[in-house]
Image (cartoon, rainbow, N blue to C red):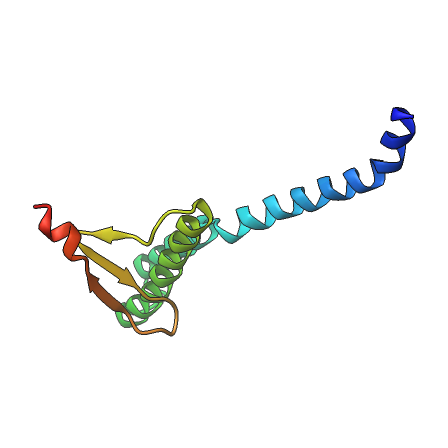
Length: 111
């Protein structure tokens, strides 16, 4: 009887395994910053080679830095960590959003 139950559940177990694997791969790609860092390196090389101007470099670098910060935020969210705080301040913001700063008085009172 147990063998028959295992045989009947195999397709469901296999499907669950596939879904877990897809979720893992998607999460890794969602939080992978290596391609963005490569783009930053290529941008620096283009500047040094004289292929782009300083102004263009600054504009593209700012966009890349925003992407890296967004990926860092995603990593923290996937890990279940709170938003990044520094010195009693909570920084919130994202692409095409305003940035808000919240002072955490509980952190300030401990000092």
